[in-house]
Structure formats: C-alpha cells, structure tokens
Length: 267
Image (tube, rainbow, N blue to C red):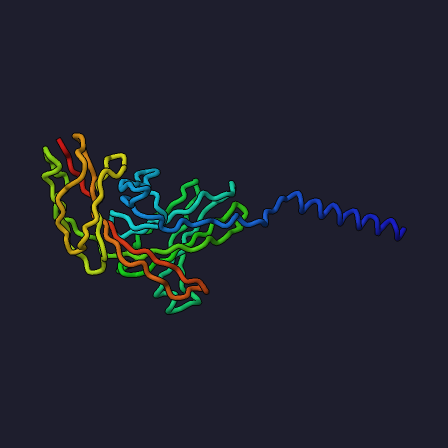
C-alpha cells in the first residue's frame, strides 16, 4: 500500500510539472538592441562626391542620432529589433550633467512606445527648458509580450544653437537660382557651417561649407537646376567632445544644429 501511495504522488508531481511547461511561460529576454551612432551629415563627401544623402524613409535623413530642423529636437535610431514578439519600447535619456551630479539616479524614461516596427524616435524635450548646450545620452529598452526586457547600448549628441536664416526668405521665387545669396546669423558655439540644398525627394543637389566660418553670406555657385520647388537649410557643427567617464565608458560626442528649412521656387 505504501508503494502504491508513493507511485501516485510521483505521478501527480510529474503531471504538475507537465502542466507548468504547457503554460509556455516566456522567460527569455529580447535580443539586445543596437543603437545607431551619428553616421554623418547630408552633404558629406563620399568617394569624392559632395552630394551624399542619408535619405531613407518618411523624408528623414537616416544618419543615426542627429538634430532636426523643426525645433530643438534630437532623433535617435536603432537597428531593426530581431524579436517578433516586442510589445513596447521604453526610451531612456540622461544628460552628462545629470550623471555627474547623481550617478545613482541620473536617467529618466521619457516615453514608452507601442512597437509597430518603427525604429526611430524624435525627442522634443517638452519638459526641458534649456536643452541646447548639453550633451544628451539615449538608450532603449524593448519589452516582449511576456514582460521580459533588455537594455540597448548608449548613443549621444550635443545640441548647439540653431543658425537663423536671413535670406532667402521662405517661399522665395526666382527665375535664376544663380541670383540667390544665402546668409544667416553667426552663432557663438559653432566651428563651421554648411548650406544644403535638396529637391523634394530629399536628394542633396548642392552643399557648401564656407572656408571662414565667420563668412555667413554665400552666393549660390552650384549646378544649374531645372524649374521646380527646392528646400534648403543651414547646418552648424561644433567640436566633437569627449565625455567624462560614464559607467566606465568614455563617449565621443558629436555636436550640431540645423536651421529651419525654407522653400524656394525656380521658374
């Protein structure tokens, strides 16, 4: 009788184990996401050509973490997530100043996104009164449907003051693009500037970096272009800085800003 009871208890235990396995509880976290560091800027020279564009989708240049023309914003990007059961993604951000002030509670969750396959995020700094002049660091945390999560690596960028365009005015119309002169106000934190002219498909048609960064009045000297609508902006760049040690890592921090974009029409 005793042996029969033991057999029954063992059998019930095995059935209990089978029952837990059949629940299919997922305890495996997602693959670690890979953030995309700053790859460069539209108008950079590659293979001897100066019309290189990182344009990819939704009229956004795919150049990794970067500033944006509409306001003081930073766009971050990451490689496509490898797991097919991602539920949502948390966006984490901190400044170098915050880390140095309190290394125990330096980062904050600035947003949580339902994951639909989009692999970028635009930080508007709604709660930050002065985002310019600071070095910003980002990492993401995807959660799967079972609640498991993984932290990505970290990328960074420093916001500069935006160049203010003086001319041409927005919606300028001209019969001859060679008659146009581009000018802007100098900023106190830039080491160089670049004019970038796009077509509406966001392909770079012309870019120009003044040899003297204090020369902020540049006549158009690019190729002849067909009649149509075109977009231009002024970009500013600063020194690439080296961060203080952050969690044992030292980061190279690119810096820059983009002016508003303006439309010109050539007849």
